[in-house]
Image (cartoon, rainbow, N blue to C red):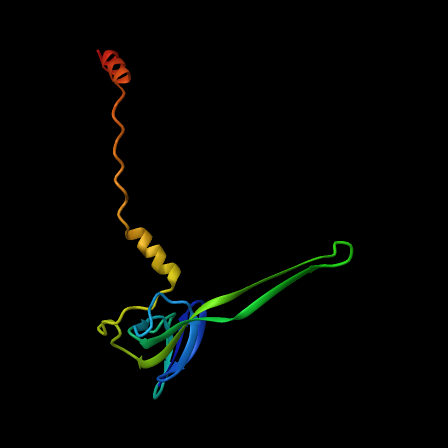
Length: 151
């Protein structure tokens, strides 16, 4: 049985036992995660989602957090400018091993959903309690003027 899943803006065709390098996920090594955005499930019968297959999931185990190969971006301004600049970076990736492809029953599995680090930061920011701001004490002259204006 195979599945086509979507994570990090990319699509992957996977089956049990595959090892994937995906965009960085908010998980630690050894943790079990579940991909819920399944576009297609195949095997004996083919199921195509609109846009996702309801109840389908792919469970995986996080092997490690790694960095990809170095990507070099070289900029050269030609002719009279004679300037050049080299920039580069290494993309953060998560190495996962697919353990199971589920065509149905994903909601009852109890495994944490795979989320990217940006999603995790956004969720933590939205659920964090707002700091309590103490009100500044009223200024006595203004309070006296306001009371006099009401009378």
